[in-house]
Amino acid sequence: MQKRNELVTFVRDKKTTNKVRVIYYTDEYLSFYNNVDETIKSKIAYLKEILISEKVIKSKYAKKLVDTDFYELRLLLNNQYRVIFFTIDSEDLNQATELLFINAFVKKSTKDYQKQIKKAHKILEQWTEES
Image 1 (cartoon, rainbow, N blue to C red):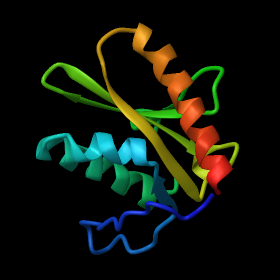
Image 2 (cartoon, one colour):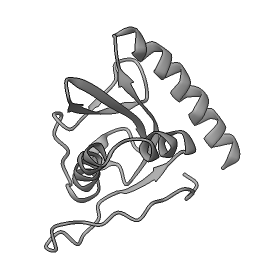
Image 3 (cartoon, rainbow, N blue to C red):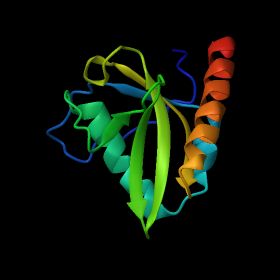
Image 4 (spheres, rainbow, N blue to C red):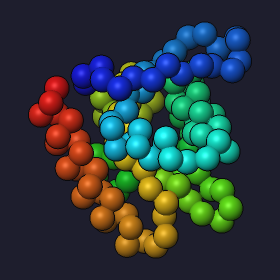
């Protein structure tokens, strides 16, 4: 993966100094992130901290989407889910060393998933071409 749009991630726990993974970001994801409030940003920061520092990622944090190459992170706030799609550089999330946050959205219905998966494919295709 091209090392583009990498943000510096600060780990809150000083004991956790070993980074297991690196996270990269597409412009589409950054656009979403820059337009959410601080409460959501702090929840995202917590999940990113888990992804970069924990060797084994529990399914309550990240799940593989069926019949796709994508994973999802879900955040619940004020009875609304925010979903972040990402992909990895390995067959298994626990073996991955690089993650790419592709896009994110507010889930309003189950129909949103198919639209967002198609959008994620297009974004990933563009990312790959530019790399």
